[in-house]
Image (cartoon, rainbow, N blue to C red; front, side, top):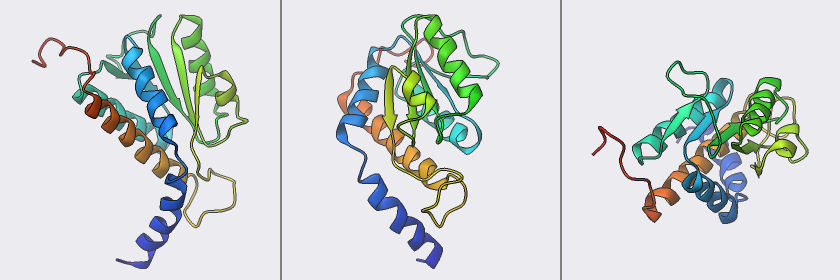
Length: 174
């Protein structure tokens, strides 16, 4: 393995080990309880939550990406998973607050416990990791948080698949 991959894994493994089973369970239960799940995030974080929405759809959970042309309106009984490393991105906060006004629950995934997103969220999931502007990682920008986010969401998907509690297949998925 090359030196860069070893450095990334050396940073990632101890940080991922800080993610608790409770953090995985709480989001999995929220998804199971939701009528539909919506995801949002910006930049690379947005790409990660989009991949998670695809995984949820593969598991037969109704999942949508905020901002896509075919995404329905968020409503009562829905879950919005909003991910942002710093937890203070204005667009993410605005969408989270708007979702709550129509009766949706918000799961805020961030690296900063004292962030605005963590404070607004009905379910706050603080994932360890370094975000842009913080010292502590050899990787650029918010790469470490994004890697932890990817692994965390994959763990949630594995939990959902293992429990087999996905809703009945939607039309065309039988």
